[in-house]
Length: 176
Image 1 (cartoon, helix red, strand yellow):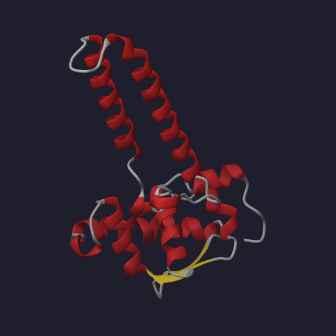
Image 2 (cartoon, rainbow, N blue to C red):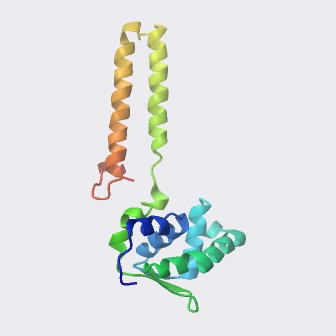
Image 3 (spheres, one colour):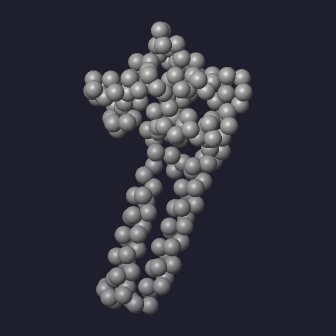
């Protein structure tokens, strides 16, 4: 396909997780792979397991949808070259165009909700202790605790935002 895809077409093509995962996997394989390892990896991602633990049923479900629907659609839009006879897929060179539509680091995503939940829980406990004047924490410390929790949540939100921008990396592995 020689013409550029519109933003609406890109959204349509990459609205399906299996198509995004297919392109992400191809990028990791230097742009080409056979169908079998792709099926194994997509099934593993979908079932949150290792490729060795993927069942025949899980593999078959992914194989059928990739073979009949997703790979032909990616080929039709000029994103991959799909040879159904050889079971070979090749990513075409326009990958920079659709990079923003792909999931980032599928198997290494940080669970940001755990950071938010932990700060909220600790803050709520400290705030309750301040209101009840338990231990060394007095009622006058409640506003300081509330402000501190707000500050920490803002720092986490900023860190999460920056870590999701492709041009930025954070120290200590926080950018995952």
